[in-house]
Length: 262
Image (tube, rainbow, N blue to C red; front, side, top):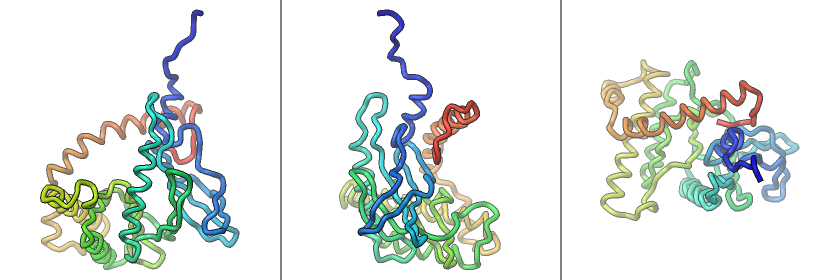
């Protein structure tokens, strides 16, 4: 029979870039016997989808679901399970650290729920109280003391200025610890390098938002961009430019407007 094509359609390929494909986060969920309904899907990328949920009293929680959708015919649910278990490990290790939201439970094979932090993500023009970045460095030092590198401090949305005026860290998806490759000299070297990059990015944000608080030593640190950072940007920048261009074009043509797609 003529005319049957197995070539993926552009729209199918675009949905393949979403962790849940054409699906979305559940409309409602139950945590410790309490019912929450979805308020919004705040992010939906290749690896995970994240949404805010609210109960009748107005209290919120955050659900993050790792990838379940196949990609180019390759099963990827295993990756979602792996990422979920991995990120939960970091929340558990930091469960007693102020500034890290508490883990509340699991949803399905690839999802978990954590506390909602009321506040605002760092961004250009945000009025940051004096001493905020000193407190953020204290928080990172405690994370580092537990042999963990946060790794993602370059992304402003991952650092929250809480309504309490304190810093909060969310999203430990790409964090690193000694569980990854074992307690070896090589892994400890890598961990220390990643921890240095954590501080570099915090100081970069401090230079942008509170330049008057930057010390001479901190200014010297932030002026030195490591080879690791250059390599990371060289690898990831083309992918994110292409992804943003695809979704922007699909939204403009009205063919794809999924909430939270990035």
